[in-house]
Length: 67
Image (cartoon, rainbow, N blue to C red; front, side, top):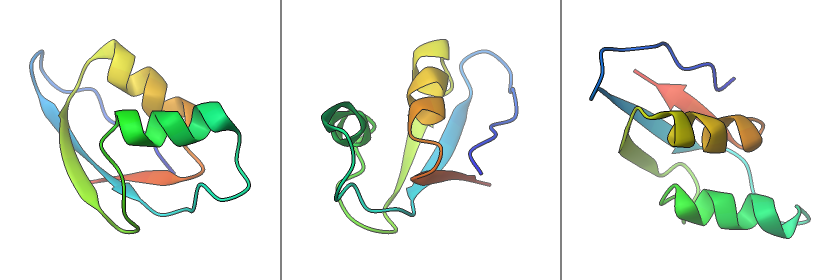
């Protein structure tokens, strides 16, 4: 799932969208867009901050953290 490992301050993590936002709550759709995930299997590299970690936890069933 989307269990991200803690890295040094200022580190980055890569997140891939694996699920569809169809038939999901509006806030989950907007969270995916906030993470920059617009297409299926899209991978984005984000800063490892507490706010990003919270967004990933909110849509953990729709994303995965890749190495």
